[in-house]
Image 1 (cartoon, rainbow, N blue to C red):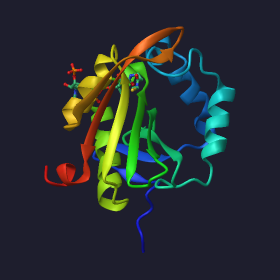
Image 2: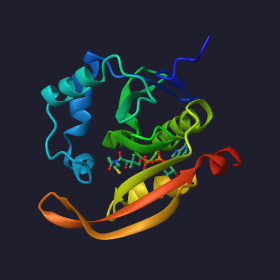
Image 3: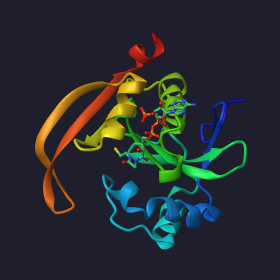
Image 4: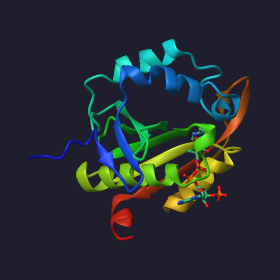
Length: 183
Ligand SMILES: CC(C)(COP(=O)(O)OP(=O)(O)OC[C@H]1O[C@@H](n2cnc3c(N)ncnc32)[C@H](O)[C@@H]1OP(=O)(O)O)[C@@H](O)C(=O)NCCC(=O)NCCS
């Protein structure tokens, strides 16, 4: 039987589909100015979380043109720490990463552990060729995460993104499947 790619497990974490019961804790994690600073949202309500979770219902990772978002749950106490996502591009051999941890759960290696599992899925199960991440130049924690995972800085686009009222620099990190598998 094929493994269910909506469920991933790591030593400390369970990555699983987001459930409607996650809407309130997810909104609480995301509606924090520090967490929102480099993300597309300014405020994040329970209704926003509800809409996200509804849109994801029944989705699977690897669907061309679509994001799949996992809840990051700590195994020891089933607390929701954040979420991480993999976008499958229109060409399904290409992917893009997204990730968010609540402020209290940062700097404990949870994002690295979760994103490593997502990259394993992307390259080992979904057969992707390349996975990238697009990052605001000031998002040092996200840049450090990509470097820790072995992604390569491939581009620095100057003032290329209109973001929260200003033109911002966009940094692109990426890794190829054969590079990930040879690590
Ligand atoms: C980007 C983000 C996910 C990075 O999270 P993070 O917690 O810094 O990343 P990691 O999980 O890799 O944690 C690494 C840190 O945990 C420390 N750590 C502590 N215990 C650890 C353990 N058991 N294993 C591994 N690392 C551990 C590491 O030493 C490192 O510390 P440092 O930051 O002092 O160098 C987080 O900052 C975030 O959610 N930001 C807001 C949302 C956002 O901007 N998302 C990205 C959009 S592009």
